[in-house]
Length: 94
Image (cartoon, rainbow, N blue to C red; front, side, top):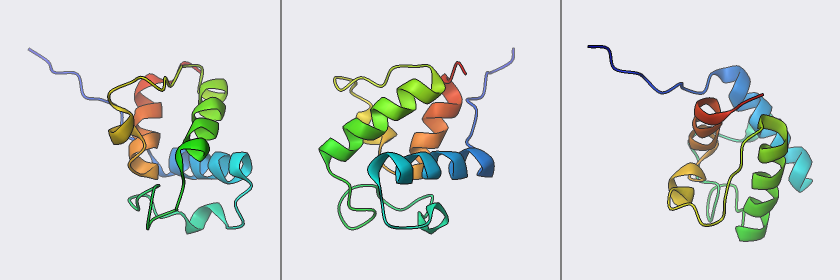
């Protein structure tokens, strides 16, 4: 019996998602400055709910799947750059 393992985000995807976030939000920092495991909200990157909506929109367009505001997993998905990139790796269609 084999167990399917969810894809993990590799370094290339982490960088790609960081660049996407910097571009979408017009952040004044280098994508490499976003620590993969730092919180996206609060003391980490300091994003708010409007920022997350923007990120969800560009992720949906770029990777071909919908991030919905009513998803119970959103807190987990948007915890950090790594958690977002891992979710993308598991769900992307493009």
